[in-house]
Structure formats: C-alpha cells, structure tokens
Image: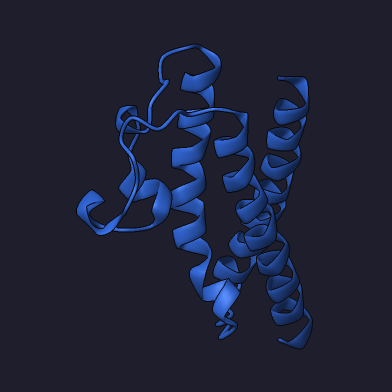
Length: 120
C-alpha cells in the first residue's frame, strides 16, 4: 500500500504545481493555446474525482467500479459512454494506471504553462 500512497502523493504534488502555474496564467490573463494547457481544467476535475476515490478506497468505502463515478474520472458526461466491468475491482493496479495517466497529464501541463509564462 505504501508504494501506491507514495505514487499518489507524488502525483498530487505535480497537480498542485500545475494548479499554481495555471492560476498565474489566469491572474495575468495569459491565453495559452497549447492543448495540454487547454485541457487542464478537465484534468483538474478528473483528478479531484481520483482523490475522492483514493481516499474512499483507502478507507474501505469503495471496492468495485460500480461504487465510483467512472464518468467524471474518465472525463465524460455519461457513464454509458464508457466500457467497463461494473464488478471490476478497485485495487492498486487500477489506481496506479490512472495515477500514471495523471502524472503524464500534469507533467505536460506544467511544461506548457511554463512555456506560456516565459513567452508572454
């Protein structure tokens, strides 16, 4: 469990760094046309869902995919748009895969935000 917790904490730090840079862009009214920068609000919403899922999973409140908001986690409006097994387990592998995705999203967002701040 500790390795997944460490991975979560690492991704959460990247999320915070990206959020701070995004806020700087917003505060300075800088438009950033980079696709990663434009997608950050979606990543932010999805990561908030992951944070809730991770906390609930740690506390034993969720065990199956049917117990969580798969639509928000996946960045979609309707769960009907997602193919998943409702009886699938929420486990370290499931959470780890999503955390790897978020790590990539936030790294790319940070890179895009820094570039926008430097060039404006």
